[in-house]
Image 1: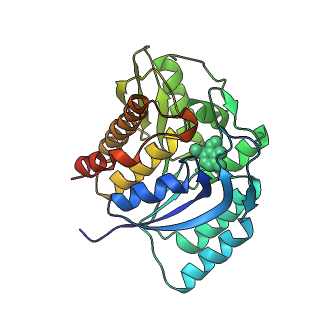
Image 2 (image 1 turned 30 degrees about the vertical axis):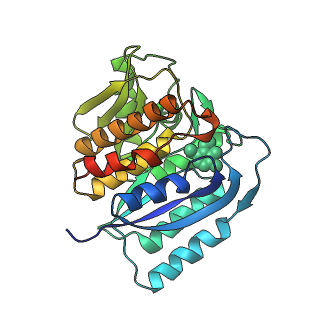
Length: 278
Ligand code: PXL
């Protein structure tokens, strides 16, 4: 199979294993040519550390994409994640006009919050901008908090009902027409996983729930989902790879007794990613 290529559009948080410092190594390890549009440079991710530096690169997003178009560059996929503000969402949408062809699939991870709360720095109005980007996507990967915000539904805490998850996924599909991969779905205490809604049927994949949670596991999940899709897997098969790999990273980080602020140890799980994708 010819080598696949992806353009990853995220911030670079220098320390803390999220966004581009997760997407770039994982996609490259999966054998995919990965180009990046960095949307901002931060000293750390914003959730676990206070007082981070922030250098906004919004003004560079469109010119980079425009240059790539002039060079005739083509991508099999575009994968977007955390955006720092509404202007970045607009610039990314304009950039898509330059670099997205009919054969490019767009995966949007609408990173905005978790556990029923928006991440710091975001207001509810930001949700409306993210929804517009999601409407351009082929696949979106919200967690329950983000899905509830995008669907305009209340957030249900803890183990949620199957009826709630179905309503969330179908409402979001109606609003975006993108395939929905809902993360952090849990109907019982010991299991956690994803719900996939492709417009026709809903499918679930679960794994054992670990006794700790870490930030930015959504970035690991969405990066591996993109990699597995590009390596020719169906959405369901790709989601299963991404669930298993992310769970492996969490298990390893717990075994390591590592500082939870430092994100998950995905690096030492890369050999498993390569095995899963063979
Ligand atoms: O993991 C998502 C993410 C990416 N980038 C930055 C973040 C976060 C989550 O908080 O703060 C800067």
